[in-house]
Length: 337
Image (cartoon, rainbow, N blue to C red; front, side):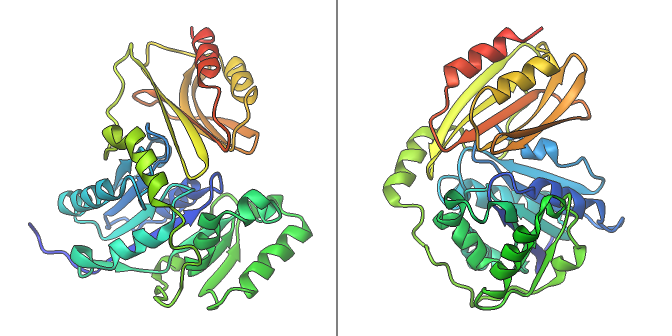
């Protein structure tokens, strides 16, 4: 194996729907032509979507870990996938996107100790924030979200084009009230992260306020549901296949679908189905009669946009309440053509 060491590595955190994948896409678009980058994406749901939504980009290798958080149930798969990414691609830089409800502490510990200590140079952790959510208790009081903020070296207010003056003020109060002070902060739109943020160093003195946010009994429960399907990459669906999987943990429930290309959906009907059920986060790429569509939504707001064709349709829905999986499944099958 070729010897590698001190690979610049950046964690991009942020709660569900804040725009992490869009931000990583923006960073990849700025990648120097002669460099190879690696991206490791973690999905809470059991059928990965984000790796499909990122890229493709020349000189970029993407690995996906579905079926739980890197900080607990998918921890071992994380180390294996990262090892393979390094061994197979020898990247000049690595970006890591944990699931929105993943606690960053264990990820940081994994990347700065043991085998990875000499191989990786963990830089400043970047946390994306939607300042419009800072008044909502489900975000403000969630221990994982709090520690995403606590452990971040850089705070970035994404979707700033939608902010009111009060939203901007709340974001700046969050930045100025941080102890230790943040290395940098900014407000951006459409995930347009400054690539220079990748060069900032990590402050090892940042502390988690809730280091035990994933209790052991909950981890065991999630593992019993997901361990058999936690893996590095989900294989493409065969053209006639239809797979649905469920998961839960950290106060959230997920439903994920992997659907072969024999199935095609009506755009308007698909939008109506998605909007007919409550959700905290929905994302996917679906084959529709109008072409392939990218689905991106949070807290009841959904955007559908045209996309490049994919080897299969993928859809993931996450909410703070148990999902009406059977009803969603039935409606999806009814709008297939």
